[in-house]
Length: 145
Image 1 (cartoon, rainbow, N blue to C red):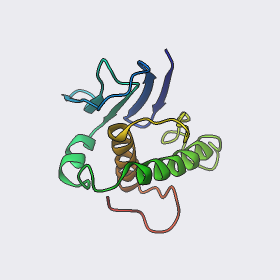
Image 2 (tube, rainbow, N blue to C red; image 1 turned 30 degrees about the vertical axis):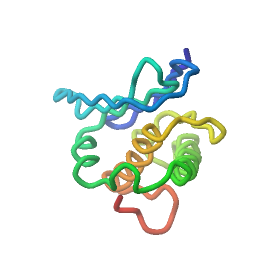
Image 3 (tube, rainbow, N blue to C red; image 1 turned 120 degrees about the vertical axis):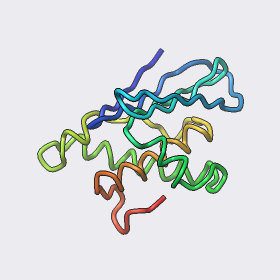
Image 4 (cartoon, rainbow, N blue to C red; image 1 turned 90 degrees about the horizontal axis):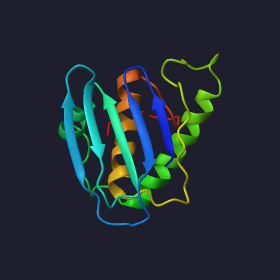
């Protein structure tokens, strides 16, 4: 089982390989008030999991993010690959970028089908991260959601 973790100021994104079967994603949400919001996408038939622990993200996702289905999976995958590429570049330059924000690289590959739910959550986390920490990962205007 592969575990790739990304630890931010108060957040963790984790991907792990679960199984080779592809089915519809199940979403399980829990709140941990000591650490912050926790969103887990998991299920016994899922190939990948994502765990996001970030104060305020769960609320933001429900209240501000565009609803699931607004963007198609191809759009989300394209944006996530671009965000992850820039993220990893910033991780590799700790003297230029805040190493407390960009601690560990993300292992996201554009040739792997992570499913809609994982891509949706990851994409929205990047939007939330940029707005919350005043970061601009892709240049231009920081997206609102």
